[in-house]
Image (tube, rainbow, N blue to C red; front, side, top):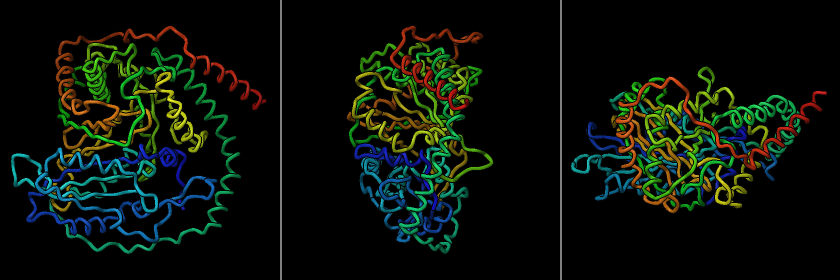
Length: 509
């Protein structure tokens, strides 16, 4: 048995009818170099032969009675690959718009908990070039639960399932697999009891180090010393922060990665990730302006940070931290904004001060995190007061060499991320083979006119390129100061900090 971490389990407890917690992908393949179209049966045989590279594909959840502990991953004795696959033929409607509409409907449905948490839909008859009837190929619509992967490990899994050689290999026979026996209820309860006995010791060992680092480090350095309007619940109100429904829409646009690299070179001391965040910020700013939405503060993004070790990597699971980042949307110059975003990220020392999310969830159990999120939604804190942040933005580096599936080349991919209550928009950027695809996962009942985001993205990139040419070198740090007023959050954190100081003083004495 392999127990889920607190962070992994939190995605199970956060799931609801309107907020399925899976990561999605739509992968478009060009099979015109094959002698014949790739049949669905051939794909099934191919996938069956590759199951050994992703053991989690044959593992399901084992819940602990009364929720006395986090669930376990166990081998599924009833595993059948057919339960995780579906076939759709688009027929005469094989254009991209039809494919994305189909993907949106599929991604609205939660994964079933009685089996391994993944599903793939094979879409036949997809037309790569709408002006070329002979360009029919196929696509894959993939769902992987966030409890099993994060965006970074999800990209790794697809890399393992696909091939790097353009020639179709002979499909090998599946490797023998015998599921390990399902643990008895008695063993599960004994394990849960042992974990409960160990928990106080874990809490004590973490309390002095992690809790103090969390309270003092994050409160003092990331909220008080940051020259930004940064206390919790101080992100501005926006159209993205309202109650969501179950409806989903994916809007994507691809850009040449070389254009973003040229902006990076022109601006000097910034990273490619800063340029991506600046591009997203300019797009959001234009969207708000088109809808006559004015904010007196800059939008705040939550940006995940992978904390995977290069020497010791787990194949799946969530191994990331996160930081809140001011997107400087009050700045009117889109090129100068990128420099400010870089300064916000680097000068505020988030990478040194942030504590990995799995460490934080050891202090705050996943059930408590889920309850807090539900209360945050049900009490409409984001609407009554102000949201913690406006939207998540994730930038996932992908392979820059072509990938294949039985001689069919992966030409493009779209990616989606789960939406949370009061978070109606998520942005995922994925690079592949010299292109960057920006994916907007949105709830159309919250984010109106979502289709316009693709066009605004291209307009924003052109505006940044033009502004970067005329921008002079910046020798001083940005003149960007925090708002002077004191918020209720400031008062609350001051009280919490004082209490923690007394607790740690008494503990050490």
